[in-house]
Length: 138
Length: 390
Image (cartoon, rainbow over all chains, first blue to last red; front, side, top):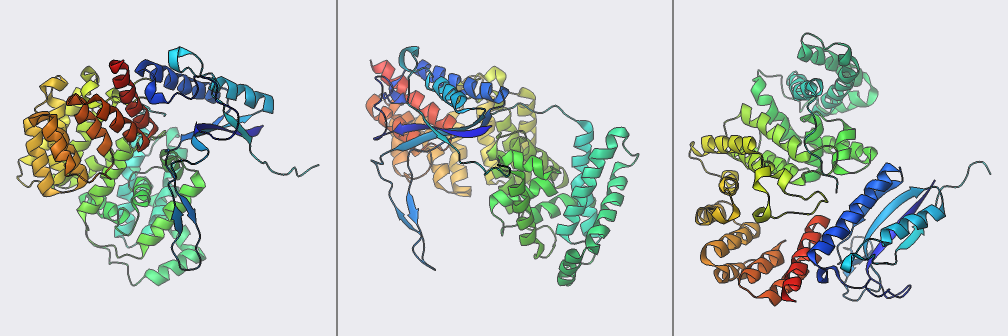
């Protein structure tokens, strides 16, 4: 089994082009379309829980701050928030699956969540494998 | 977004958990160090869970006191515990004749000590007074068990240096219970339910009307829990809730508790908040809500416990009584940085038929939402207005 991080973005300036319809902000959908979407996401997480592949998920606020160390005894330095941060992560899900193929399959299913008009939004999701432990026996 | 209804009652587990703080109280009154005694009680509870299913003892409390006492001796024999005890022997109070009824507050005021962060105080309270295992407390906060074990032992170290005095600040205890209740349902363990259980226990032992006020407040809110979310976990605002799904028995109990507290004529912020909740619960439909009386209670609350959150909620009530323009005027005086400011502004602008401004505020409010459910709800409000405009 290997763990994968599935990343959902609010906004991206790198990576593949948005497909038409996937870059419509949610507040421009109808209320029913939002409900359908949320319902799909919930059922997806439930299905992965039942198959024993779900590890966790979380949603992130759109605004963040950069922070760094500024030397002994000094308070941390902060910068931001930046309105035009390049890639803005909206949420994440961690799954624990048998193969990379299965990870892609799960990500594709998540990307099929319905949007405007009840059609799949074909949203690009970033799939990142976790670095694992070294094998003790080689 | 896992929300559960109340767990099925398990009488044996309930009994163990009711007895846990009593047993801890006995050990502490006998002069045991709080942190060591708490460990001993935890170990005794584990024994009880293992052995009682084969047949509970005739006197469960005496059984627990005996086993915990033995565990205490074992722990005290260990080198580290002995060193700790020697350091603290001067601080230990003489065992005094304390009423059983006082133990809950005594233990709670120890667990809710102002030196602890609210999260640590809640965790320690759940384990030492609520009788939950470390694993259950960890589940409630969605953190690994090892992390929670560390958080609890650090909290115990922090409060162990303090003298074990007569009941301290009831206000600090109520504050922690209030925050515990607001954590709501996150995991297997409903923190809201645990908070009600502990507050009920405290209210049974002490006549302070603010304890009763807090209990009433919790009951009057918890009664609406099933109507607050849709099946898919979306938030349902008060005025759109299906009121037939409210727990009428719990509302009746909350109203009784509140009336008894108010009759003692010693008003405080929790009683005032409970009175507002009771007025909402009392309305058969949202349209029949007695807003003028709610506004009076907010005025009362603003003088008892002034703050931006109260001022924000008061602006909502002003909007209902004197119209959205008056509500917006009241809102203008409230600090914009308070959570939900934009949501209230959006609501008032919508009622004032200023759809464009309302959409803008709903969208801004979604960006500042503190939960995914709240964010979705606010985006949905913006979407609804855009759809209407088309």
